[in-house]
Image (cartoon, rainbow, N blue to C red):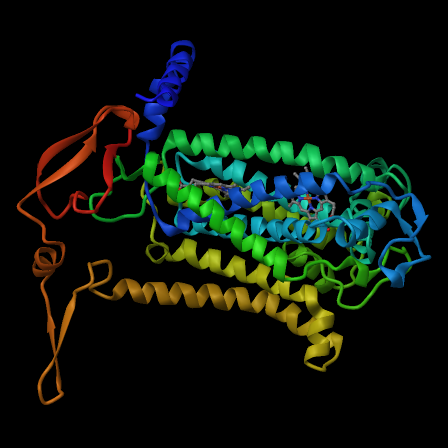
Length: 518
Ligand code: HEM
Ligand code: HEM
């Protein structure tokens, strides 16, 4: 052994004798992970969060969290001589004077958008495959909390530059908090430290954005992954997969290298977006001045549904009659407090709502195919459509301009679509899935077809039997050697065994292992 190897072995022995790391490492390295492209969605969210931390730390070196007004003398000529906040001036400084500052800002912003998009699609994957059912309800709850915290941190993040768009967003947030019955005005003054805009909100947002919320999010992601590791991932139905086993690739080296590679791919895509696609050019919007607002002001995409709800809400002001002292609930309360409350309340409660109807209290480690659950799938599609229409509604002014029509027409069209489209989408999905269920061959393995072309140019089709293909394509021998892990939890040694080949084993899938789930 070379000296370097000797040193490495000594270091490993040192750690093992004191911390018992060898057993832990062996158990972890041998852990079996089911594999499917849709399991990468959670990973994209995780990797984007890592990118957010790296780029965010860079930004903290230069960003100044202060609403204090100064006269701008920086390198962006059109704004010279204007009164702007230090926060705005420092973000301009990051964009124009700090080396790699603009690309870091843009990567941070793109990473935030990708992060939340990945979370939402990950949630949809979990929903449509029923992966939230027993025993994974706790991870569903932690995940839903992560979604809320990430949206809030995204909103706070893009409020930090204190430009005209973000300032408008903070003003809307102030009105929303004010609208909460009884406690609204106290809460708004507590959070803002004064009437709007005040000078406290930017520094307070800063500390929430760079420390408190990321720390909570990081802790919850840790818990989320630890629970997933302990419970073992679900797997899709397929050859050899049962509710009681785990079929997949070992953590080391296959899974870890695949995941590591995927981290670099995610980083590369986000870096390319940050490098080539402009996002949030705050110098074009100008500094925040409370009495100003501009055309085509849109928040980041994940706030679009709330903005759309605010726009679509009719101008009703609910007054709770004389019995309650004639208390008026401001209009914004319904779309901006009640709607998110109901939305997230339903998301949190979904596993239990479903259980109430299905009375299903069994453990489920095999994912559902969405088509096999027409009710759940069509409810999901209908609800998704509701939020897509709300999202579209955040662009009412742009839509009216694009289609050269009146804002009122766009507003009313979207109001009607908000209730009609989800019903239609849900119903069509339900009917289609019922119809698919009638197809006799549904769920059966696809039958391979051989196409032959004759010398005269005509084609002849012949169906091959599954048996034929198994033999011809996979070349399965009678006796197949397969490796399996013995011992519980995937913690045992890898060993070889001989196994009688049958259609239900997974041994012919290269590099794939099977272990008992418990
Ligand atoms: C859930 C995680 C996070 C999200 C969704 C997020 C999102 C955002 C967004 C959208 C912006 C506006 C960027 C722009 O166009 O200027 C921003 C700004 C900022 N973020 Fe984050 N961020 C996150 C985590 C972090 C972390 C962990 C740090 C630091 C440790 C950080 C530091 C900053 C700073 C200093 C700014 C202001 C500078 C600027 O706007 O360029 N962020 N963030
Ligand atoms: C910051 C946000 C999140 C991160 C970083 C994250 C990360 C992950 C990762 C890496 C996995 C394993 C791979 C996969 O199945 O995709 C996973 C699984 C899971 N996540 Fe998330 N997740 C987040 C948010 C959510 C949300 C919003 C929900 C649902 C409301 C959720 C529910 C679950 C569940 C139930 C599992 C287990 C899935 C299974 O075994 O099939 N997660 N998460």
